[in-house]
Length: 285
Image 1 (cartoon, rainbow, N blue to C red):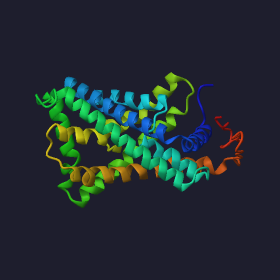
Image 2: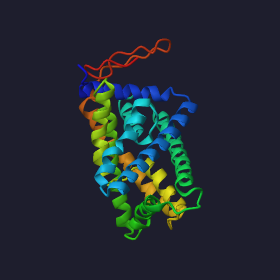
Image 3: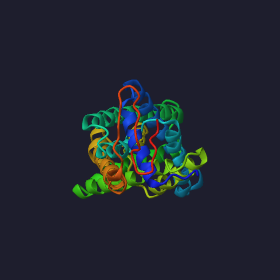
């Protein structure tokens, strides 16, 4: 059967977290940069469709393409790792130091990828600043304002709103990671991962890595937003919300339902052979 049961998925996620601790620094950085840039591609793809059709739902429906590319190619996306690494930590298979290292390195790599694509997209859309970028450039600029000073005008309430939207976003995004693991076929992974990503994007929730592209891109387009406003009014509270959403609503719930009943894991330095991690879930070698 192509479908994998939740306990099997929990076991596969725990194993994925273990595997991430063995990844070289170069791999983490390169895969993180590619993820940040590809999510930027997906964002401009969705916004272009919205401008052309005047139907935001169309943009939301096609945005998951970028997330699916990241998942299928095994790139590093910090928002997904907020759940994957946490589940492995809850299960006692990775240390807090290993978790923190992965989050920090991948976060900065995602940021580098987002900034890289923002600069390249600005150059392509505005011909290196010679034109204004048209309707798409104006939309990106307006989004940058709405995501920063648009919340900032409400003070503490605005920051709390951003935080909550970050929670709701990564609850769905990390479920995209989970859903992709429920199938072993490429088509099954695509369809399963598409659902929660569509849900988050269509409702305008806040994703830290998407914002690593869209806010600086808006600033390049002339949005009256400072670097301080970007980080204080959006990037920091969104990141904290994404962490909470991934850790609490995905990693912790999976651990409570399946991880606590996992069988003891045996690791030998020579062969790294393991017994089953979760009930009924064979460990990936």
